[in-house]
Each structure stands twice: as structure tokens, then as C-alpha cells.
Length: 104
Image 1 (cartoon, rainbow, N blue to C red):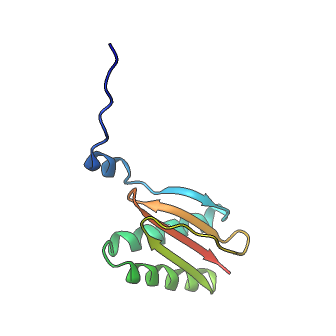
Image 2: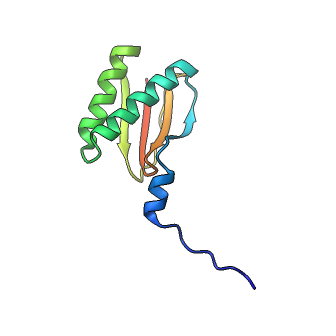
């Protein structure tokens, strides 16, 4: 007899999605680790205020790696961008919050 598959409980999904999921990056390993730490900290610090979250990420990236960095934080967005090589990161934090970070 075939087993029925139950849909995943959202609480279980959030517990499993605690780690960041990098969808695409071309950054060096050191830059990627620092950028991921900055993004994760900002999303966890401001979970309901995307404007403060993006401002925190941009300010810290501008200080560490020079400007101009651009940031988009949100849920359910698409993008098409032009960026400098070795300066782009797209990841998900907490399973649902997408962070797009790039330098022009």
C-alpha cells in the first residue's frame, strides 16, 4: 500500500531553515563569510523592518569593502542586475527572507 505524504509543517520548516542558504555568489571565500555574517546579523536584528536591515548591511559593507554597495532584502522578489565581478551575493536567511547584495 502506498504511503501518503503529508505537507511539511511550517514550524518544522523554520527549524530546519535556520542556516543561511546561498543561492549564488562569486565572491572570494573571505569576503563571502564576512558578507554572510553581516547579512545574517542584520536580518536577525531587524526581522520586521527591512529598511533598517538594508541600511545596516549597506553601511557595514561600504565601510569594509568600499562603496557603492546595493542591498535588497525581502520575500518573493525577482531581479536582473549588472554588477562588478567578484562582488555579488544572493542568499536566504531563515528560509524565507532573501538578501541580494552587489557592488556596481
